[in-house]
Image (cartoon, rainbow over all chains, first blue to last red):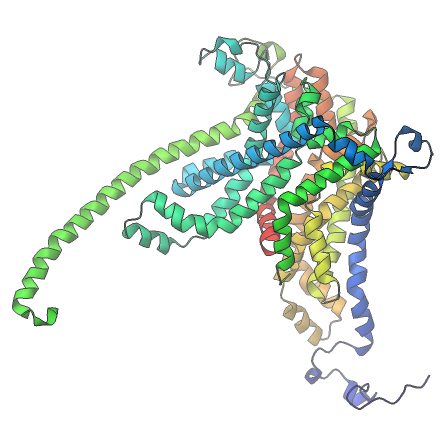
Length: 328
Length: 309
């Protein structure tokens, strides 16, 4: 095949051995024939990562979305084609006051837990930055132990701590504190006290992340500024409120956001506590509720979609900011 | 204005006024320092107290694991396992179901780890060493995917695996694990690859190495710490995960260790907490060590993913 005549600027360089040699003047001495490969390479390199994401996340997500507009129950699992039912699954779910109860409880649980975690976490981070090295190391070790232990192991201990007969919590309350009514008290039988226990556990295991992130951010606050403010007579609270806090604000926002995402989808803690003998219907949050619907694929799909939308609502501003961000 | 004042008068006046002021300032500072030293000490006590409260459940787990049931069922808790035994550990370790779950966990973790690290590494290279169409959308997808709650997806993940006969299989669970871990791993490794200047590679290429050679001889060794960190991260995720394992591994013979522990709790609740605590300790202790290795990078990565994304 003969190439059409090209204008001199875009013509291929002459195949002259002298000119085509790897001269440093020509920029990167990459061989010419590698160029098509270089253009293809990045896409080839992405394929191995994209395939499992597509199989494990993308396809289930799409399928679930489609399924939520269909009738898909036991009969369909044995091969009957699924029927389109439009929004019926959604109207059925959202017309049920119990479902709204679950949504309300989940949002409340999420906000209370995220709020408490942030409050305790920031307070402990400030504490960490104010104490001597020995005390700081001790605090760090305590936090890391709580953070690094597998969730299931910690849940197991917490069940033991709150055990009605031999648990330490009841022993402390009934013995040294003299509250005799806690002898043999069951903590998870009542929904309110169930959520209290769940909150204690979730906050306990979430706080370390906030502490370490905030502490790292506090270290970035320039010491000269703090000193200057101190000499000008600013109290400790004023220095924190007007100097440190604005500087660590971006990190706090992110940490709070992650807490909201994590606490809205809380599953393991609730599920394990339910299995410990709590009444499940009264204690369901979104995650365990979807799990309880697992026999009815379409309903579970619709509920999971509601959950996704809720997550997006709570985190929408964060995604917008990411989209706006120029440099990736 | 001060220029009108005669110098001989002004100098002693300034001196006498300045000295008491300076003395007061020094005294004030000394008082502040003394007060702050006391405050610091009190805060230190508080910090240690908080640390003890936070670490207590972990201590309690290990301590109870060494105690026989008769001890644990006394009205008074035993706070120090002075006459502890290893019987609980022995009972767990000789249990055939523990060994079986250990093997399942090991297989799932190994497969997940290999897949996640390899695929993420290659993708991180593409994203940070090449400029191509769709690069930004890929990074964005990775960041957004991380926010999809697995808890809103597991039913349909189960259905997909069920269609392909991958329920109750190590491969099936590993696929969903790799999908879950990949986004963060790509993000983490991308940071490491960005940290190795491309000029190093280019210099090697000027010296006559091919692009591939330059990469494997120069860049790859510098990336080893990043690969280790992301590997440990993947290990922790796969080893500790409960929710997806609960959904995918429904048969008792295919349980991973967290599921096994939950089964142990349900079998021994109220009868033998010592054995349960021994099981929890055995699962937890090796993992804590690994966790300490990557803790810093993990939190930095989470925050950076959110801040810079």
